[in-house]
Image 1 (cartoon, helix red, strand yellow):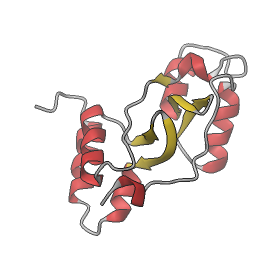
Image 2 (image 1 turned 90 degrees about the horizontal axis):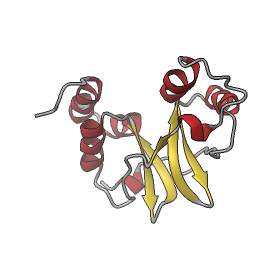
Image 3 (image 1 turned 45 degrees about the horizontal axis):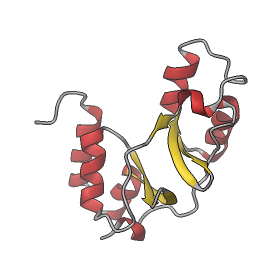
Image 4 (image 1 turned 90 degrees about the vertical axis):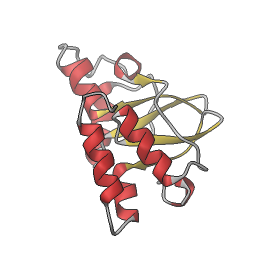
Length: 141
């Protein structure tokens, strides 16, 4: 099945100029751990709850003064709407990420998460395998 059939289409995004505190509040409000960063209708990066902790809080930056552009991951790993779900799982495993922005010409079409893939299958073997590879920081092969 193609990613476009199971991705989340209604994606909450943020701007590179938003404060880290604003984005953290959005994540809490919506119960999500990552937001694509969009400027001029193109994805510039992604910011995760982990980015906020590691690149802002742990370095004692002020989240009210820090901007998303200061701690986001630039040029995130992504896929296209036509990507096969198993290929998306493999991309996540190889890059140790749990979410992929779904892009067409740098424009955000949706987002797919490991959870989306898991819900798609009754037999979650592939998803479990991908999660294990994401969680294991050692080289894959």
